[in-house]
Image 1 (cartoon, rainbow, N blue to C red):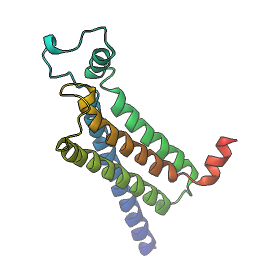
Image 2: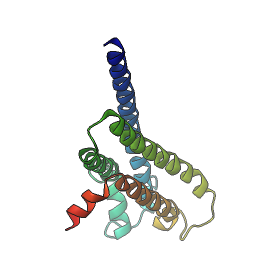
Image 3: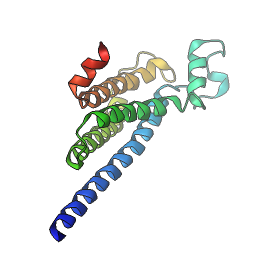
Length: 173
């Protein structure tokens, strides 16, 4: 009886640690969403007199993402997508601690890899002379936004892949 209790305690401790790691990865995912928002605001540090006129799409888009609700949109969508995919996968996996640990670790690792990739991408891409237009502007931030969109797409695909196939086929009918 003591051994069974010890095993259950160990299992619960592993599950709790995994969920804590998952929560940390989601907090870092919010930070990555804020980094991505930076790519959408190329005029945020430009003096007002040097910004494009207010009736242009570049200025309107940059101003939208510079303050709430626009500045909150990418982080919330990023976290919300991961949470929704996790919830869908959690409902479809077996109700065992081992299955939940595997799912939680998979999501935490993919979140952390995405955050590291976005962070590293900023350093690598900033050294490349790939500007489509001079700083400031979307021609300059495009070189950051394109890899971020590709990384985001990869994150969603990897996390969607964790949902059992039979569920995906059932919902597509």
